[in-house]
Image (cartoon, rainbow, N blue to C red):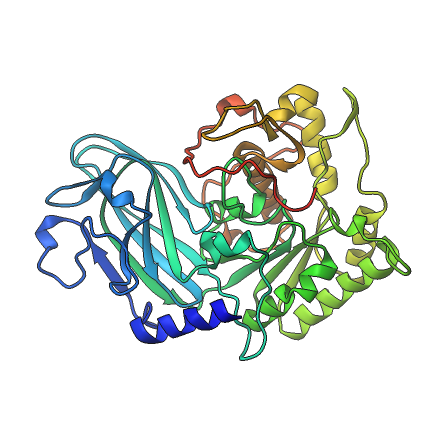
Length: 426
């Protein structure tokens, strides 16, 4: 609570992105006499905008823009809420190819090509989190979460590849929102090589903001007692969506009246009712299959009766359902025991900087695996008309879970922010 109050004081002293007003930042030397010129300026709390994490040392200053030679972070002090972000990319010297992420590695745009001598404006919706619910109630973060980009006092954009930037505009917006409630297979994983499908959904949607409150290690029970559901309900507006995917950690809970058809189903019904009271639209998801092969044609069913319990609640309460257990089972069987390792975190020692031991995790995904699941989710949502087609990118690919993509076709840029420790939950 001390940390949350301290951040509130900083906002009061230095200010943040002003409510309802566009903040435009320019980077070319031609604009260096204006108040909104940033150039190579480093971020600090007093200026409220600039290049973060000492990445301004990778930046070349040009007359019309700045160009980045390595992964770089641009941050602005920001209040919680949804923001419309407009970025004007350029290519003054040669063709550029840029990947843009926000906060804890949420994908916004992947491999954007700008031809030499041209420029292009791209727009995205980004959600800025905070822990405050009211004067006395806060989201209870785990220690590892407190160090992530999602929960600081800044809205941060990450640029990877060959990137040149003319300007960035950030404007608060009251856009529709999809809130995500789930576990480590959904959350924004802050560090490589871990990834989850929720952090790729922003790159596949438009005109709607993704607010990912999922947490590693979360069960329906802990999501409630750590006040994450209360946080979602405090921000939920009429017509917003809440996607709910649990079971990985719920199935480990033991005790009287704890189980798929008792406590778990009761919590699901409670969530659905609370969301509907606020005018929101719940969508239920069965859990993603673990990579446990019995043989080349069969998987071990590790979730027990939990997927079926979710299906029953969805039917009884007439809630849209995305059956990720079935879909990811098809994907894993299509990939097979060996190729599926590319979708889950399997890396030999020294695959990443400071990686001191081999990684073999059959629950958590690589960027490739998480992106594949996100594409499958997005297509199923669109195909089933669970949410309007206007909320998806124009070129959203058709996805058949029985014929997933091969990792050899996957092109995605990463940075060196790495941790050897697996996320909470398994």
